[in-house]
Amino acid sequence: MAVTVRVPAKVNVQLAVGPARPDGFHDLANVFLAVGLYDEVTATPADSLRITCSGPDADKVPLDRTNLAARAAELLAARFGLAPDVHLHITKDIPVAGGMAGGSADGAAALVACDALWGTGASRAELLDICAELGSDVPFSLVGGAALGTGRGEKLSVLEVGGSFHWVFAAADGGLSTPAVYREFDRLTPDAAAPEADPVLLDALRAGDAVALAGALANDLQSAALSLRPSLAGTLAVGMEAGSLAALVSGSGPTTAFLAQDAASAEKIAAALTASGTCRSARAAVSPAPGATIVSG
Image (tube, rainbow, N blue to C red; front, side):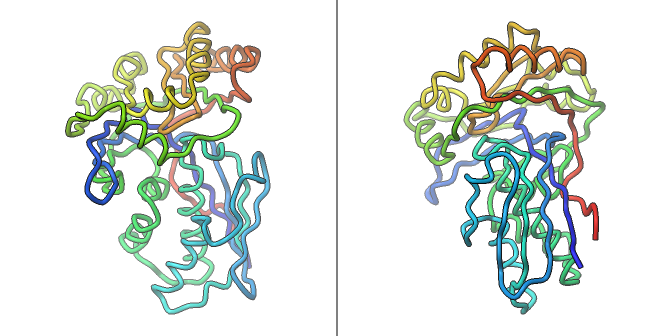
């Protein structure tokens, strides 16, 4: 028996970051939007916990117990008194260390796959609780669609989206460390304000209005990401010159995101970015997308 779960990448259409908390995390107003770039995780019975990976940048994915997919299996097994004996194969298509929650997505997918494989019967609330223990972005990978994340991002309120939005994502060479980006944010922004969701942006999502959304996109980590990786400014400029409605660094980067008017515009922007030499690759995708979903098994 095998269970395969498909799980989407995310873009943060708003990432408002507060000052560092005593526990080292930051309070966030994090508006997540799931996009149609997917990883898949397949769970099959095994004699012990084992992780394998294929796809772009598979060599950069840890195959030990630090992988969130492995930790998801261990936490679920511990909660239900089981041995975490499972082979988890990750088929990567979300950029690795790219600010699009690829690792978090794999954790959520592994959790759903193991729940189905083992027949634990865990409730949605129990799965979300384990997701929050795994990491700040993992609960959204389970939920998908659009949501406002508060706290450190793990407390979700589902948001209404009134239509489809077309994006292009440009992958940079190499990754960026999320903790390093937050440290740079703290250095650059010693007086960070309490984060709040932008009502204009929420209205734009609800209306499905790409132009209005473009005017409200915001990422408080962008300056920190650009400080650590100045070359990203060139990628952002190329995408805007090619007709993007707006451009921003996705999460902690280094992937950059470009909002397009429609599918044809997105393909034109992706082609311009690919030809520019300022990024490793550029791909179009549509949002919103469903969260972690069983596709076979």
